[in-house]
Picture 1 (tube, one colour):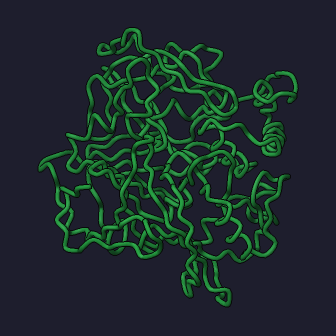
Picture 2 (picture 1 turned 90 degrees about the vertical axis):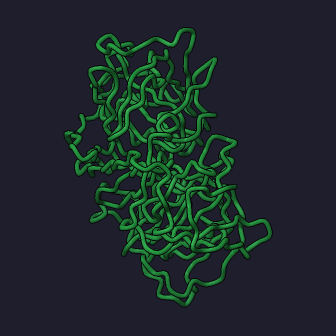
Length: 467
């Protein structure tokens, strides 16, 4: 792999953890030079949703992972989810999708998005996160004149699909629609359709149009936009989101008969650098940057690892893990006394569209063995622990790079009440799941690590964040 963009002041660092471990290249921020002088760079900022409902946040986040990767829900998790949704007044949500779950009834939708969205003249874009802090929504302009829709940026998929004027009214729930007829630049891509099937048996599908799409400071003409003519309930219920903008690779685009290029793929040649970065945070706004790397958002060098894009994901190889030494006080942010490194090679993807960390069972079991009272509880749909338990940091090994995930991030959600102040049981940000062929380093990981998604290679870059 060539790193044409970078003038290295450092050398290749070979991993010594295990044979065949991924090589890591350490790069000082000052050695990253623009590829295209005068190219575009822009920032997409997030706005934290202070009005999200905590109820069932943990199991719902885990269920969304199964749904996203088209894996059938385990029966115990499905039962937990059914109970949660009934308590939320959405009791019919699963009835058409799980055999024996009952007859279809009528449920109520969620409240609309609580924040306005604006783009300023500096190319900075405000963004509204979705209910439960699971997804972060960004304003995207589509058509001529531009129509602003709130979409989810997702590095685990490659489709730009939206609610539109073709979406049946009974599958809408207050979402902002892409009005095809009102855009003078909309063109139907004849004989092309798209369809995505989810793990609960539902699907979204529709037609394909070419139109102008703008995000921040970059505009793409004749971008493929997938117009929904049928939408699964999981999306209809989410009134804040009008669809999804995928940031993975073109090969997993779902348009047929000819796959279409993603927005980021079309925009690369206009960017100062062919990359974007994710700087997600816990409990306060984070941001995406496109076309540049902001050295104030991380500390030290960036550690780059090769990406295998053959499956369409930001896929990389991890080497193992370590926990603080057993005699360490090991508070939630403890990184002292790292203990013994455990070699456990595994394939992983970096996915902004997944909230939790989905890890090999051996890592999850080793971690929760260090948490007093932790158990993999079918009544809660996953790993839970006493909320007052001391949570050690988990260090994940990516070649020679050590990615520390503080314990405070692994305390993900209250499990037995709707508030951390009153809860006695908490749902873990580290979970396992059956049927997925790779680990998923989702937002729990990405909130701990500054991450560069670089199409030159391709490669991923990781660095610690300022304390």
